[in-house]
Image (cartoon, rainbow, N blue to C red; front, side):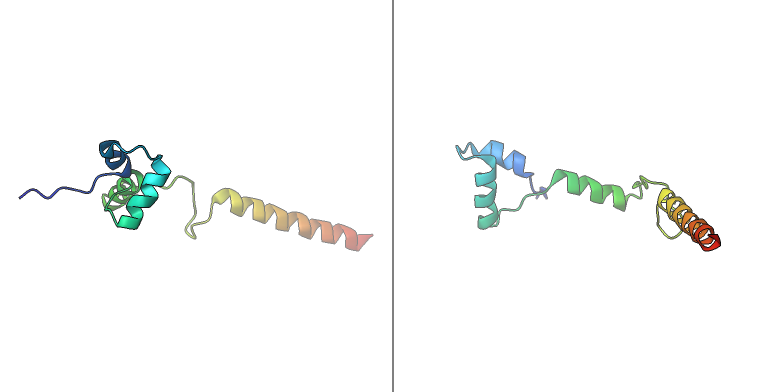
Length: 89
């Protein structure tokens, strides 16, 4: 016996031949409890399971974007210099 994977909502919608809009049909099928998969989510899960997911932003060990860290340090530095400058006045 063959173990078939659930079909995507788009595949089921095309096969149904309904005159309903996709949104209406989808809500009706969800209410019925029809099993369907989201192809994008399934692909993302497979990439994670295969260890192929790559970081899209350069991050440091804390998981923060390096640009955000640099900007934060710059803002703090400017604030310190500003405070020192205003104290001398």
